[in-house]
Image (tube, rainbow, N blue to C red; front, top):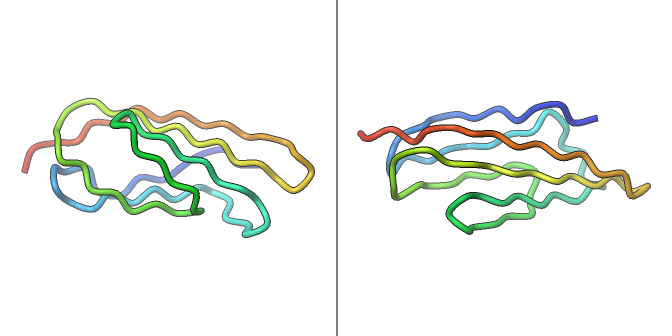
Length: 79
């Protein structure tokens, strides 16, 4: 089961990478971010154009239909 998401980089206008602990290609991935953007790939690279508090939501569904949900709060810092 998915238990966590690793975040790399936390700065304004830098690429922030989101990597879940499971990346099985047979599962479906539904990412949502507090700026309204979404993604459906196992790993996401995202650039935030504003600083401050952000929220990431991830729902992963395995082939049997079981869902795993993760929410992370983080801060994007100024350069």
